[in-house]
Length: 124
Image (cartoon, rainbow, N blue to C red):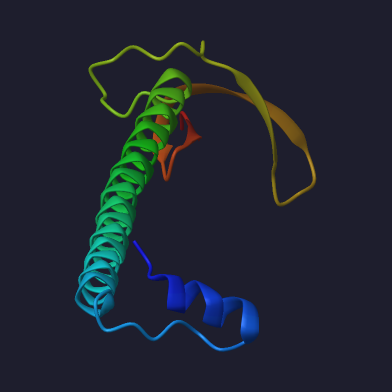
């Protein structure tokens, strides 16, 4: 407990801090303990930030993989890449312009995949 003299000094000069030697070791210990707690708190916050960054990176990678799989599924639905897979598109008739300007219909026998698009190759 503070002494009567120190309390009297507080009333005489309120702007001057208490300067008692009996409380100095306790005050020093309290300051050290507060500084250690602040450091632990800051380390904890950094660790949480690192963990969140790792989880965010994993989530972004998962989104990227999922997006790539969705794109591959959509592409495979529209355009099978393997010749063993039957085409979902029937053979078509297309108009070809001859050099003379005559339009004639040609039966398309084969459809091939080139860069994700179907290319029709007319029969000779």
